[in-house]
Image 1 (tube, rainbow, N blue to C red):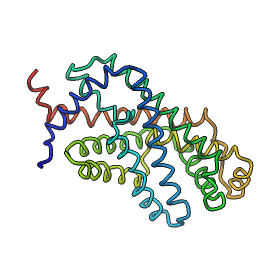
Image 2 (image 1 turned 90 degrees about the vertical axis):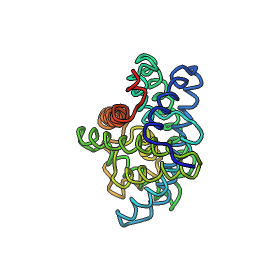
Image 3 (image 1 turned 180 degrees about the vertical axis):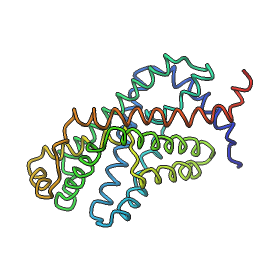
Length: 274
C-alpha cells in the first residue's frame, strides 16, 4: 500500500484535530496522564540501558535507540502528548477548530503530562528502580537532571525549538504509513536523532529532572551523588521550572508550530480551497 502524500498527511491531521479539540476534558486528561507515563517509560528504559556506558557517544546512541519507544506507544495508542499537539495550530489556522479550543487542549494535556511524568519519577526513585548497578542509576539520573537545570536559559529555549521540530516531523512521518511497522519506523528516526543531539523535550524533562530531584532526596542515593561530585545546587522544583521547563516549553511550542505552519502553507489542500 502506497504511503500517504504530504498533502494527505497534513489534511488528515487537521481533520483529526476536530474531535481532539471537542473531546471531553476528562478523556483528554486521562490520555494526557497516560502519555506522560509512556514518555517516562521510554526515558526510564533509556537511562537503564545507558547508565553503565562510559563513552559519551556510545551512551547517547544507546539512549537514542531506546527512548523512541515512548512516542511509539503514544502514537499507536492515541494518547495525548503536548509537544505533538503543537501541530494543532494547523487546525486553528484552517478554522476547523477555534483558538480557544486549541488552548483548552494544550492546558489540559500539559497538566496531565506533568502529573503522569512526575508521578513516574517518584515511583522510580522511591520504589527501587534506581537500585540498578547498586545505585549507580540514581547517580546517573541526578547527573542528567543537574546538567539540564544548569543550561543557560537561551540554550534551553533553542534546544527546545529543534527538539520539537524533530518530534513533530516524527508525527507526520508516522502518519504517512498505513501499517504499524511503517508508523514505528517513521517515528523512530527523528526521535533517535533528537536524543543523540541532546535537544530538550519539556515532557521528557518532566520525568528526567524530577527523577534527579527525587533520587537526591533518598539518603543513600544522596550520599552516592555527593561522592560522585555532582553539583546538586540547582536540583529543586523552582529552578527546574524557571531555568528549564519554561524556556523548553516555549521552544517546543515554537518548533512544533513552525513545522505545522510550513506543512500547512505548502501542502494543505484545505488552505487552497478556502
